[in-house]
Image (tube, rainbow, N blue to C red; front, side):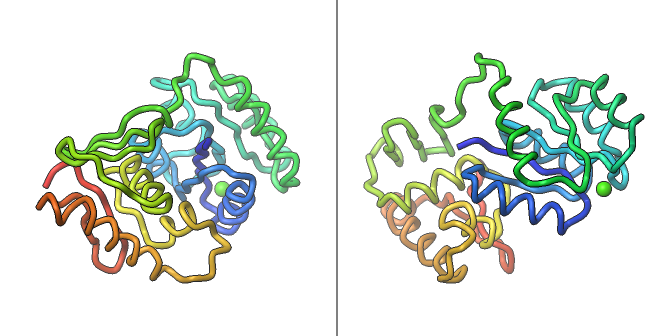
Length: 228
Ligand code: CA
């Protein structure tokens, strides 16, 4: 699944775009300022970034400059109407495309598809890489999980949840974020489902092996940690 990072301080726009992208089958993370966006991008793999230019603190052009120092990820700039200078500076700065606000979501989706197709072919799909957290190993290709070398049988939902936590290891994920990514944002069962499935996972990967991987962050959600 392709992952898109939205860096946009207008929360309503960010949320709206996020829902549309999730509906289209993308995995989405949001940041509301440049600094958080950069940190997220350094911590997690993304296939594309939607980057607002007018951001508080570090502006979008500067965020782009810093991203280009170490990555050629496709970047689509979100610009205010008639901000011609921004567009030129942005494209000179290595943006792949830009779209002017307010935009039709269909147009944004089309530009995203184009930008993703241009992606260099040598990007190894993150989805095929084995994930490891200490004695816990997950093979996405074989859909197998091992703890201390022992195979553990998980249901599809348990596997998807564990894979998501491991892909985002050391990052605290809220119940809502987990729910959206594993159950879909139109799931009406409530965040309780997350707690239930975390319990299932713990009973299979932790309790029999007496090792703790999944940590509860009170009032927030869960994190899988590399270090105990
Ligand atoms: Ca803005």
